[in-house]
Image (cartoon, rainbow, N blue to C red):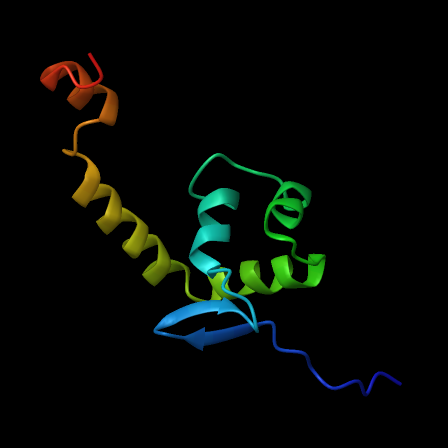
Length: 97
């Protein structure tokens, strides 16, 4: 029989979903896995020193809250779309010359 107590890998701390006891934000991991470069689960595990169970918990959290999380990413994309690239600013103002 499987009567093991559930393990919660996600907590809400300082208004953000994070890995329990760590400062790893769910949003950072989701941005790597889904909304960014398309990193693999093993890559994310290595980069953030997470277990596979923690990454699966992050994915479960994402899919439980997908519309709201996707809307947050879209809102942030809209905010930064008109921000010039740092290299463009360096060229424009001749910084570093």
